Image (cartoon, rainbow, N blue to C red):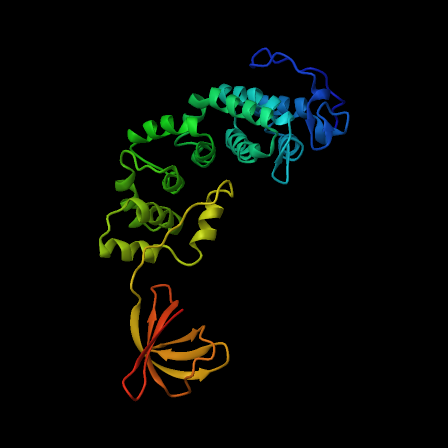
Length: 324
């Protein structure tokens, strides 16, 4: 890439765009023909990706090509007009078969996630281009699920085709179950698959299944307890990472009663109270609690070890309940 000079129109007979004046297509660094430097040479980057099979012995060339499309067409969550010009080329590359399909679909999902930053006429055009490739995108199911779901979450027109495909799918990836929480549907075998994953050994898959079943599962106490157990306090951040930061998944924990333990105060400070509950020591976020060392109480603790409430009975028999 760095050895390439500024580039004129690309021969794109196999693409949906025959030629473009890249010097008029603006990105983060200005014109996109390479006149602002190799990092803005979009047509050369697209050419490398188009012939990625030939460039496999030169991975730095491929990385540099993606660098142009990841830093010039989009930067810090802001999408630039040149991104629209790349779409037909990127979809054509995917249709022809490419060893970098995963990175291209991720890039398209990132563009879609940032498309709201375009001015209205360009935003509508971007959406139209995505919709025009809806069939291609839905075919990513089972191969590039994260990117597919990220786009479907933002482009309503894709949802019907995606849900139709899922209605006959035998297997469903965990990230798809996670996206369905926000897509508002549980088609085909998704509930059955979620139950299978909830019983599995993969922690991330269990969290995805639990988030899905928290919305679409039966309201049985036993199931609600299992869902709660599969969604630790770190679940929201972990599932956002699993979604590739392309969207923020919705995670609703079911309300499950904590397990109650007899406890004894070990230390009472101004901002917290330390108690011994069974074999564990638990710090209660209880400011100015009005208790002292040796006082007896009951403490409700979740399956994840978080204190939820304290029940204190004074000598007169008056019961005080404190929620944390």
